[in-house]
Image 1 (cartoon, one colour):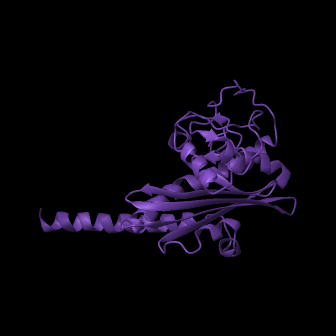
Image 2: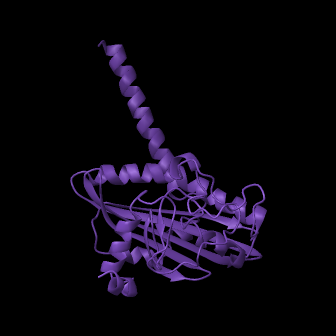
Image 3: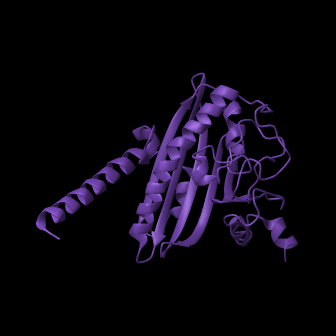
Length: 260
């Protein structure tokens, strides 16, 4: 390999690294104000005392509807209605719901989905999902998804913070890949929520995509509700593992007694 080729390859790699850094830095705080990024949120405490290799990404968007209109869309997110993001990447090509799905129950502590289990809930305002540990890229990774909606003037302000830490020899790699993948998906999800809230309000039906009654109509990845009922495709992702974690953490006390 001659020196010119080496220089070209090195230049390409340096340029790629710089582009990725700019992209992830932009995506880490997309739409959020400095005050929102600095704000202490409920889920932050779940990582206290954990590994030093960590990331916190705060994004936000303003909506022209009040929180009571926004909340039902957040309540069914990942709980049978899909993820409102890039469907081919995070939903198996299924189209996320564009209405409030009739059969999805209200959120309950211990609901288990692809992103962990529901550990904190303030109906109408806040949900916090917790993934307490998974081996990924050679390290043990933990993740928190904190979703908060608040009134703002005549509408709402939606803040979503995704944070995580990692322990192991590949911790920095794991966190870096986690940040990159999440950056790609997060902006599209916020815009997906905004589109649904502002365009459809709280409509109960979608004439273009009417309900069939199938639990996997709008979402590929399995969700196991606190009651034990399920939606999505059984075995897709690790909802069963996160349900067991919720039982071990004594979030699902009744289920713990029933499943012994």
